[in-house]
Image (cartoon, rainbow, N blue to C red; front, side, top):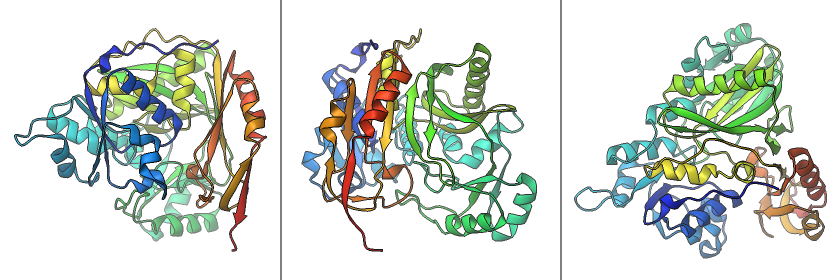
Length: 429
């Protein structure tokens, strides 16, 4: 029904250092698949509690890595010290990261060691979203923007961009802080809230600047790619279902999305040209775009593999794992990606609790698992606090389905998701 996983002989006898790791089942699955094929994995982390949330590390899926090093992952010298011997020689065959907060550092360290990796400046341009806008310049797929550095610039920004607009931190992940503003009062409120954020979710310093972008109406998708020595291979297009105004939080994905030949060509051109303009030459990318009445517009380019089970969608439909392909690249290999063929479809629904509080239990799991083709992938346990912040981090699990086509898979994933009830002891506000 769906494609079998391709072979990955390039891992045998190799050692890979990962600076921090992505959360949840798809990335733990990729880790196990690579180890089964002979890859030795070192994990460098600055805070194990980021993954465990107070639970036992030894019971966590990441505990299966071959070695764990507790090190300041915001300090390139500290990372270098872990992965080199007394003569400064690399102890690993590759070093990488999928964490938005550490991809630049990993690329910098890999370059200093002479290991394969992407251009660090390209990654930084993509991650700092106002720099991406500047790099795209007057290209038709760019979006008008304004970087606000002080309160007295708001009137100028409003006159230039008009309402509605999107306000966001220039450098963050998981849709944190992204909000639509429809008038000056909302703009002032967004500025006051976002400019007060002076550290990232991983503790790195932030300027307090706020990026404003003209709001573009249209259906949003993402394009999953792998760039190998300057050539960008496209796995396909993923739907991006959003809860919508005022925050833009993902609630589901399907793969692959069918497009007309003309629309697909325009979208792929915009994505490939974006990566060329920022100088991105090697590695995975998850590029978000909207189909507007005036053509495709690039929302963001994220130089890493996609999250929220999207790697599983791609793998089950194409037979290629973006995670494993990216690690092959990090080790200096060349993944055999093309020709990319699609077999069947897949869908995921991101599960969010409806009530804030401490999780007591999850009802309906057996009913959800009984839906044909569905996997229920939860990443919370009784005692965990739910809905602490309204962004993608509030997701408590997934219902995932692969099927004969994406719509059949989506219907099953939705049916399973509707079975689940997260019973909480509600917070007293």
